[in-house]
Image (tube, rainbow, N blue to C red; front, side, top):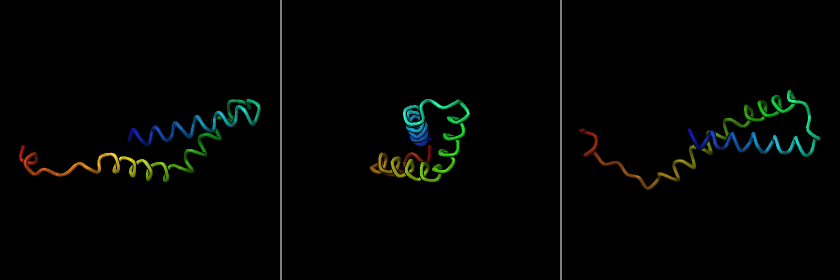
Amino acid sequence: MYISSGFSTAVLLGIGFLLYYLANDPPLWVYVTTVAVAVLAVTPLLFRYARAVMLYGVGGASFDPRYLSR
């Protein structure tokens, strides 16, 4: 969950900086609309890559049945 939020934040900041510098600081509604559409468009990819990063990070963890009985 945190990884996906981090990816979404990266998209938000990236689009915000691009709009600020390439579009010469447009009105607030342009920021909100552009970021919302972009995040909604790439949400499936964000979740997929977040899961892949999470599995890669904890892939070495193994199941220990002794902890199941507690």
